[in-house]
Image (cartoon, rainbow, N blue to C red; front, side, top):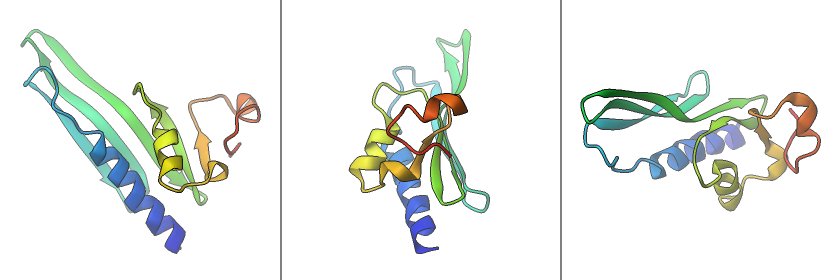
Amino acid sequence: MAQIENYRHLVQQVLKSRVYTHSDSNVDIYTIADTENDHYQLVNVGWKRDIHRVYGTVIHIDIKDGKIWVQWDGTDDSVARELINNGVPQSDIVLGFHAPYKREFTDFAVA
């Protein structure tokens, strides 16, 4: 259980470190943390030049069965790599955005 608590804290820390000042001041970046069900997201919400709607999940991470599932990573620098650099073993990270049959060909957990 201590490992899960550590993962919860680490995932939230990684998301908060990714909050940045958007080039358009009408776009907010939110971290969303459902610690009861272990769902975590970084989301953009707003308007670009007051004409185009901006809404989308930048990062989505779940914690399931003791592993960190990176469900979506829309960043240029890998959130999985940042987790590894913070001490999470690759065997505890699942790249959920890869099809299940492809996961066995990565250095990460299959499920």
